[in-house]
Image 1 (cartoon, rainbow, N blue to C red):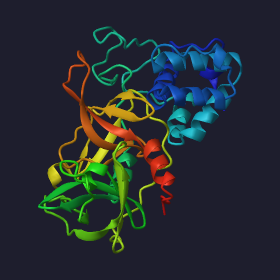
Image 2 (cartoon, rainbow, N blue to C red):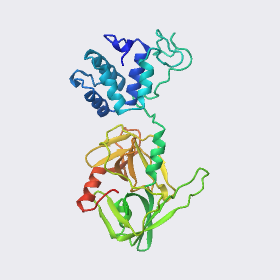
Image 3 (cartoon, rainbow, N blue to C red):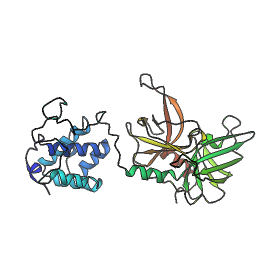
Image 4 (cartoon, one colour):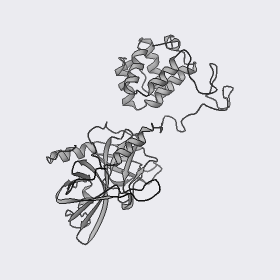
Length: 350
């Protein structure tokens, strides 16, 4: 239910609790598609919202218009529905006795770190404006669960072996790159033998966990060299520690999204890339990003910050001049991979 600060017209953004509400919403809901969806859910007129500028400015416009249309309650209800964890904090901010950061008073101006409103504590802020890298702690547990589908793939060709990364996308179906299961350096033939190593990772003490090596059936290899994907069926059931990865739930990736890759770099134990993970380019076929990989990471799934699969990692490419880095990494869009797999009459999922 609305109280004082939300009943006022126009809204008074000099009040610290209203600024805190705006900042809470802009930190939690900042992707353009998510902001626009919230406006529609609340029944607001999108044509009256200024979607230019950063998320903080957009939420200033949204709250102002919601008050003008007498739909603030609808707006906050939509936020609670889509982001239930925010409900408790919203209640604290709009209640009779708002809970604010230490040192914040009604007349405090914290925009100037050396100004009179600065109390020497509190008033944290994003280091890079409008790029929020904070994630709920559940991100860690969900990521650990997703990692159970990831395995090391070892392929044997005439006279040599190679390694890559794969994921379990069905009870007995593995997905990786075409170049992991085919001899691109030779005659392009499929591997003679294929193994999937599950649970090949280090524990908290740095020791290798007990792993399970599952043989695969090379005669079941199906793939597409142009889009660099291939699947193979296991000869025996994967271990009960494994899990099937759902490829169907992701929203389309966009530039400035964050993407994470669970992989077997250098053919070694399972690892994850967590630093400078911004998406730099997206089209209908590929997604390019700064997420780190190494040899052996080929065939790893590319996850967004909700742990939905948005791509299949397969190579590096040169970065455009002036980007500040020499290379980007690249994956094939998961929509293209799924279309190819289903086009071969192969069922995906549990």
